[in-house]
Length: 421
Ligand SMILES: Cc1cc2nc3c(=O)[nH]c(=O)nc-3n(C[C@H](O)[C@H](O)[C@H](O)COP(=O)(O)OP(=O)(O)OC[C@H]3O[C@@H](n4cnc5c(N)ncnc54)[C@H](O)[C@@H]3O)c2cc1C
Image (cartoon, rainbow, N blue to C red):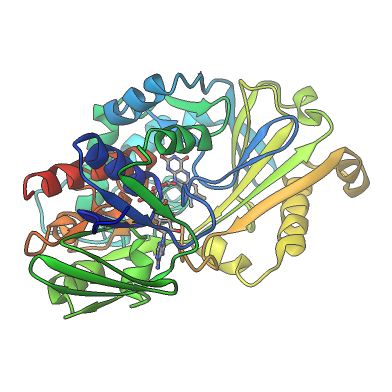
């Protein structure tokens, strides 16, 4: 491409790729600057010879239209989650569906009419048993990877409403791996007006109205406009500098946090747990290291995924790959009451990815802290028709921290850009 691109896009995760596709389809020239040696960002699938292993996003939450449209275009088969979810506490097993009334008790009174507060503050006002409250706290940390002492109740209310609107109680898995979607979108980018630059780490964005210079480890790039799609942790930490600075964005970012997650996938020779826990879907436990586990049901793969989020993830930080796998195996021994030697006999391989230590994510996904439920909109707002923002953290409708939220943000940013051309 000889002439300057119409748009520079920083980040080739699902938000950046979605925006690139929309813009190219409308005839704009786009250059995607991606720091890693791969596209997809927090969608990261490892393909073993037998099955895909998801190290980042795994589930399709509900039926969000933008994502479903793409999945259909890409002809990607999905499997709806079925099976039985269990609760394991103080050595006792109970079916997890029995907990729904208890959840209703705790979350039912959450509203966005009163002034915003943290979930912990809200919980202190709720008339519910200690055990129900404890389960609710674990849910907030486990699902949202959020600190209960900080996460905004208004943001949680919006997130719950958003889920209801897309049938969020139904969950699906991609059969061929989430990266099939990434490759599909990338395959649709026309070579003649889209350039993808991998291994290109953006360090600074110098801007005036209608003019951008992006400084990277591989030289400078110029364009009339730029779309920033990187995870918020990189913007909060100043890893990418803006010159002049963007005080409004820093204010919004102060109300957004990135939750930590450590996820482990253990592959076994067979589904040895089926004898005891037939049709296992999820296990929610009081384990101190990996409290949440799930199987691949209804897909037949003999894998178990361990999930440690929030404070649980922080406790594991600094451990190397082998130490994390070891912790996960010990956690399974405790939960399943299985002997060390027996578990090792079944165990074939383990995978993990440290999203906190990964310099290009510095965490798993975003949430808003008390007082900041409008921070996603504020972060998303374009500056001088020159700087545009997308990525999961910018979704204003409560779909933060998801693939579909990131996709919608890419479409939204593309529309904003097209309106200025
Ligand atoms: C462990 C885990 C599990 C998850 N599970 C689910 C799930 O089951 N379902 C679901 O819907 N969502 C899930 N998510 C969330 C989902 O993966 C993300 O919300 C979504 O993929 C984010 O897309 P994005 O384009 O906004 O950001 P990213 O995918 O992070 O893309 C941003 C891109 O910017 C690049 N970048 C960063 N810094 C620079 C720089 N300086 N210069 C150039 N490029 C840079 C990055 O390398 C990256 O490619 C999960 C996330 C994690 C981490």
